[in-house]
Length: 192
Image (cartoon, rainbow, N blue to C red):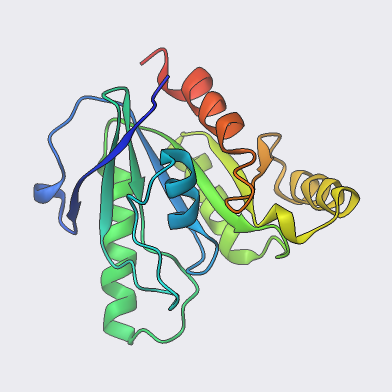
């Protein structure tokens, strides 16, 4: 099982992606969902930049999971302060990566546990269904809710999304990340 995560490189264009035959897991989510904090909690180290301003990640950031597989942190969606041209470039960058990366084996959708499933998340799920790769949901900031509220939130997302792989995590308490990592490895990465 991977123990260390190292930053490989950032890219926008397909020609700049790292050359790799290893399985890749993409990470998507809203700009303020806690993607970087989740990656850092997985790494048990600060490998991904965490910003107090949502929408700072504007590139595809590739991370090596100790020679086992790669994680790819995609820029967050739902941040309104971007210009129309920036949004078009963002859509093109994300779509190109998701449509053309042959070693992409799954998509982790990172959501704040206090948010509802919206049309944005549904579109991402429909896209992953069409593309034929599996998706799991990671509900961050689980420490903000009581245990019963957390279980209700997980059940609600499972029902609304139709996905069974839904994981509550807390970067603050360092809880849940191992379950996500084990799931990715066992179900998406191991047999590739």
